[in-house]
Length: 488
Image 1 (tube, rainbow, N blue to C red):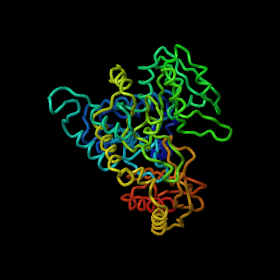
Image 2: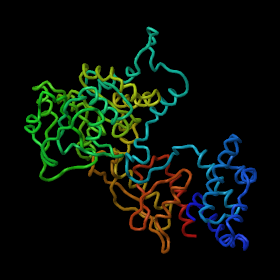
Image 3: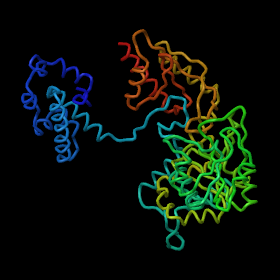
Image 4: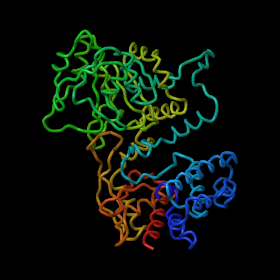
């Protein structure tokens, strides 16, 4: 039954089981009778709901979809399931067409209070970055041509000098994401060699991205030293052999070890690497160019500090605390970066023209000292508490239905600064008796545009910190509609 009704709306399922008397008898009909109730392809695609959903689509595509859909229903009937009414079949098929042709990913409003929300696309981009990406996508551009000489150039030149200026590195390279940056560095510099890592750094981040697995794919051999909570510089030195290809530090970006813990600093590791002529690689994870402590947050390692401390290569993301589009950024010694540029994996993981343009625009904000005004995630982080209180109070007052404000905490998210939060003011909407907050949250998600909220103790919770100010009226209207519908 579940297979047969997969994709049918709740009203359609109800009609399928509580329809006209002749349809209710479908359970008792012989299998051959059930099959005869199936509509033809022509009848199905001629249904008004299907015609409306398929408007603008190629006729042959809809015909093929209808054939596959009816074959699924036929298989369900062969398993003994009853045939739903024609109207229910047509409605479910129309819904399938709408799902296929819907533009995605769709814009949503993030009212969760998680600033870098991985499920919601991580960092929203600045207006300048969006404009730059739009212009890059609109037509041709000088992606890989030197306009002065007319000869082929490198796409990397559009951001390399900016990255070197911001981090103090000799050279830089940008690839698809930080995972590909780490894989590229290990493959190019340590294939068939040993890479020494603290046991406390053999981490797993989102999407089951594990350092031991990446090491294995790169062809390097993982050599773990120390313990989960305590590793000393002597542990690294004792593990060095003629086969050692690199020393690797991995930032534990999505968890913290507190209490009885000891960790080797990047300065110590760099000094050891230079002593033995072994490159030191620093996987910074999120990557951050601003001092997070200045905003009341924990300390996040910065690439410019890593380079100043002597790391040979530092690798970090572009779409987390940097606040730009997805990218993997590698900065460091010129000789090593040049070796990475020549490696075949660089082409496999290279960044496209659109994201490259957005990254360049984002980096320019840092050059101009305007990151906290222009980059959305930094504007959210820097927003004063009193401004959030004013917005939250205004929301609650205009929404009604018992909405009120109370102190709360905003999380950074995206595997950045685990345990660090910012004080905020949240809007809490308690549900009336018999109303489920999860159902209310679903109604918000089905709004256009969708509004994503939290649910706590059968109440909806919204944090204005992560809602762009231009979205305020949309959020309030979505809440009013949801409350009217859920309590009617």
